[in-house]
Length: 65
Image (cartoon, rainbow, N blue to C red; front, side):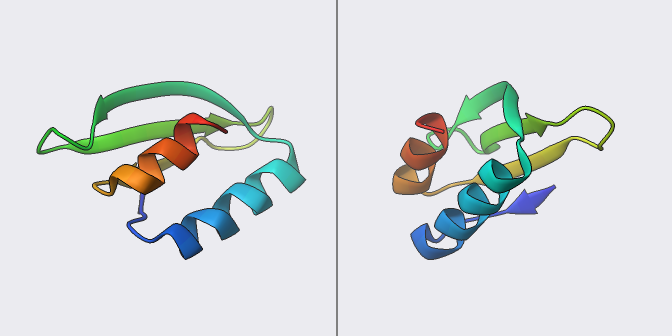
């Protein structure tokens, strides 16, 4: 699990995940909850990547992935 709370870092992660061909497989909660917004990315043959944020801007960017 990776915690991302800056737009700059999120932009890098999104670019790399797209480059590698990852797709979103699940989301849970939101920035308004204590847990934060969780999103999992999937690529066949690779482990799931989980990102967590408490930043609303970052959540929006991830939801638009």
